[in-house]
Amino acid sequence: MNELVLAVFTILLAHLNFADNHAASQYAALDIYACSFCKGKHIDDLRALSGELDKWAKENSLTGSSYVMTPHIADLGDSGLDLVFLDRYQNHEDLGLAHSAWSKKVGNTR
Image 1 (cartoon, rainbow, N blue to C red):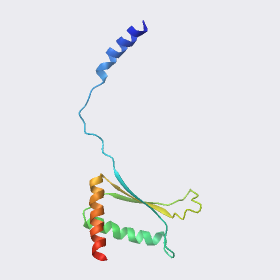
Image 2 (cartoon, rainbow, N blue to C red):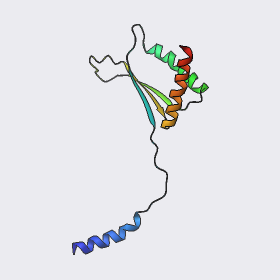
Image 3 (spheres, rainbow, N blue to C red):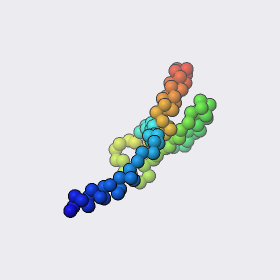
Image 4 (cartoon, rainbow, N blue to C red):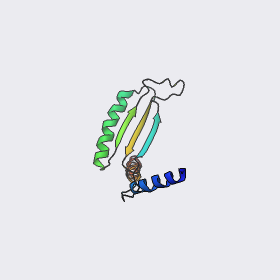
């Protein structure tokens, strides 16, 4: 009897399983840096640099978002970590383009 109920239940619900032919989901690409400030530097120095980085990203047609995360409610002990700098890109190709553009800039300034 249980097998008959299970078979009927399976047949009745089978029509709910179908493929809708949608594209696979894309995951964002993250670039994460755990940082500590050099002696004499503070968050205000980072904010000034952040403005310059935004301008550079626009000039190089880079898309993405940047975030600075600071430990407001965490005790990091002796880790020496002041912040985490996170870049988020739509996909890994955009992340690669950003790294290439940055490498070219750094290569030209040395």
